[in-house]
Length: 211
Length: 211
DNA sequence: CAAATTTACTGAACAGTGTTTATTTTGTCA
DNA sequence: TGACAAAATAAACACTGTTCAGTAAATTTG
Image 1: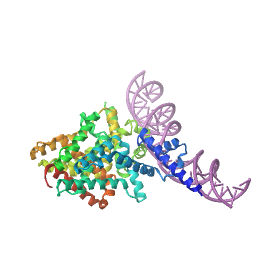
Image 2: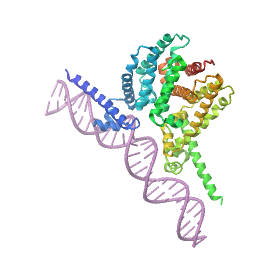
Image 3: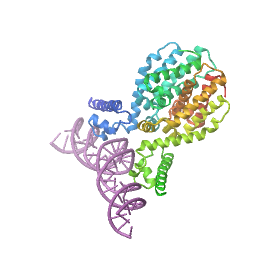
Image 4: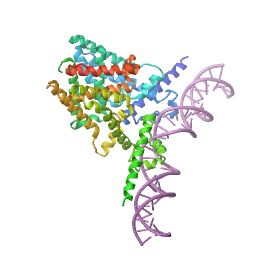
């Protein structure tokens, strides 16, 4: 009987539609403008219906976070393919910051918001794509350490240092802390330049390598 | 006539009481648990009264942010007093992270929340204490550069790099991203160790100096 | 001292928010 | 077609920030 299969499929489709509309609303109104009731309006169902497909808003934001990681991976896979470990590491950093600043709502969901983490803790699942990304960073750091012969560096510690720096840059820039501290940074291209300079600085200080 | 002066004083006192109770509520219920209506209850006035003393919630959070900077300065002034520029820089970084992690609600308000920035933009005032703190960091970087004779370093760029890193560390740690990526970091003392190691790494990579 | 005026305060409403539950509508199977 | 299960919803609950008309208190003036 294909009837229950069709039902399952329809259930899945509505679930996807909810996430799709949520995505559209966030793009239009920002993360704060995303509400259950707005989603309900857009999919033309009552708000209560959404709770038949997701246990709460946290789960919706968790699923959106996962979609955000897909977006990010897609925008970074050129960097992942670079042969030279140092250049790869640098490009990953550059693209990371670029993605974060240009897709702030997504980034905020993935790396700042407590909502997806609440869901993760409640359901005791892993922060899957985040861990994958970090482990990839660790591996690239390892490659870079081998490549430069600087065996005194510890790949996990180095990865954390790099991650902290780019994460800090994205946040400072997107929450308007950079532009009020460095007045010249009001125009976005100068801010890009600042971020770029900082990235170059890290690599210069760690690997003695210019880009 | 001292009558209008007394009135002015009373007005100021109620304003301070509002901020005091707001502080207490945030300490108890976190930043998300802080609402105008809760403040109103605690000071035993109606919610509308609060709008006679502050134009909106953003202004309350802006004033609280300023109090947060006072707290932070107080907890860091031992570091500020250190003679040796490198050691001073390191201690500033260590205390910065310590304050951020231990007073996350305050830190979040000062360095992440859009609310105080909304007020700053609306009233076209400066991000006063934040700028002061950053300029002090720049100056200390300058001192450290002179002290180590590494003239190729640019103090403003270096300050931004250091700030980004510690800001990133505080955020990753406080938003539960660190502990899910590095499972050993669940216990807070190991997390402290990780943060400390990262800090040491920065200084090693930039100044070739061990701590 | 009483009346007029200014200042301080509040009740109630508006337009939202996430979430739950009892009820109704819809679809499937015998 | 009637019974049963599944899906959807209306309505409520307990909140949120904010505004405004109207009330109460304090002060100044006649």
